[in-house]
Length: 420
Image (cartoon, rainbow, N blue to C red):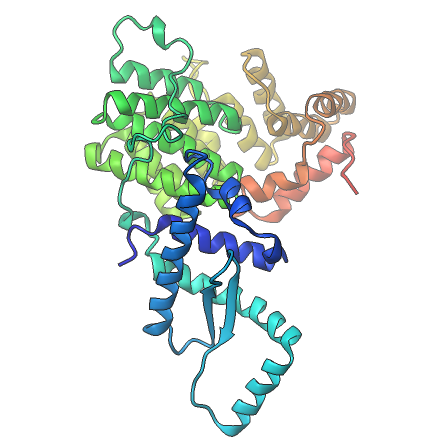
């Protein structure tokens, strides 16, 4: 009944977040459009949002009329605007319980506080029950195929596409994969997704571009974790993975996409299994290696991450020396981390604030304080809004917090000052 209700589910989550944050009174169709409907034609956004509100209201009414009728708290959507209404269920109760409920009705301030506390638990149950939001239950519906001008506005080939003499889907997809890193670059990920959608429009049966888009959409979801946008990115990544699986379930790049999506959703067992299988089938793929190594790193298997990313003796360009440096850092082999980071910097590439921060921390750990301070100064100049205290909880929340605190202490010792 709820398989196609992804947008209504996201609307419920958004409205709940706004209510819990105390912004319910300010929530309007205008604010929800900017948060959830940016991919739609500006002239269509409010119409779609109003349609989703009616759909959500219907789903909530049906749920609380049947399976959820015994729930202590009922949720509905206000007839006007976008606020959620919370009310205790009308049930036959003992006289004492009835008196207690009457007291709550008279004390609306207390009622509101209780409702806000209960809704956190209740919505956690409602979301999977109402909308069946499991990856294997998603139906693929390409959001760019409907013909809307705005839905096609984010379809654009990457620079260099015109230089390919024979534009096969494989060649076009390789262009996107090569553009994907650093995975922490949000704008880069958006370009990869736009390019992949353009390839899919031209070659709808090529699994590789769906898998490529899924990798970048999962990157975007991770980078925006905790926001409504993150949920939307995860949903679209899931749809892309499902389509890639339909077309080529055993393709290594498809397996890698499924593994990276699972990592974003913190399903680490599935993430490790899928990425290991992908790497086993195609161990020469740099991209597959990177995603497998990141999964190992973020799930705390630093030893294996260091092993799979170490360059081979007869091939110094093999492996991934940058991720190898991170693994060495977490293993507290700071000399090894510095050596790996310096080798990575010699190879060039675009530095990131996170990578640079770990370089500074590693220098500080081995006693090269002046060098560490220079790196910190460079970070402060290039990325003045960088928040190192958020790095651990965004990228590696499953790892013991001691690792994040160790990094943060070394980085601050090198000269970074945290915002008050």
